[in-house]
Length: 171
Image (cartoon, rainbow, N blue to C red; front, side):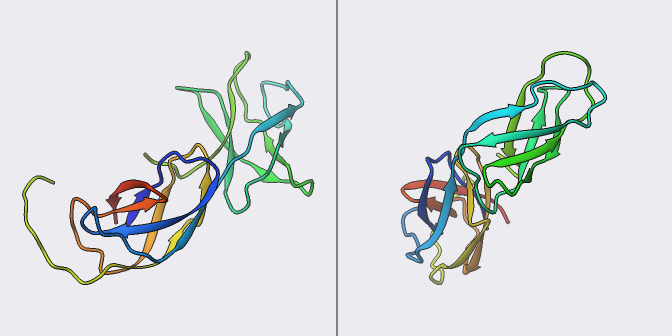
């Protein structure tokens, strides 16, 4: 079962599974939604050939969430892995090559991806064991893999992140 978390504020909340959209598991498996803001980048400029180590200063560093630096928008977007520094609130990216001019810069988490007939089927109780990942960034629609048993194929198979419900998007 794979569900996408809705846009959530930073919080720790339970994720549950339902096979009919009404009855949800009561497993209490927790999902951590992390938030951070960029407080500065240095240096503010570098050569078109790239290779400049860019320090990205954050108000907090989400643990266990792979981060990437995005340089540019639309047709000329490049992603570079962000490497945490010993400071704890700074990540470092090496700038890629790029034509001259100002470009947008973002720090983001990657791996965000964003029936009709009626019948009634009795199924065994859904069991939920864990989620992968166990946390996500605040402004990310994060694919969440739910591990458990008795996930019945149904158009209403989905998850609840706290009180917000989402439908299954694949297995």
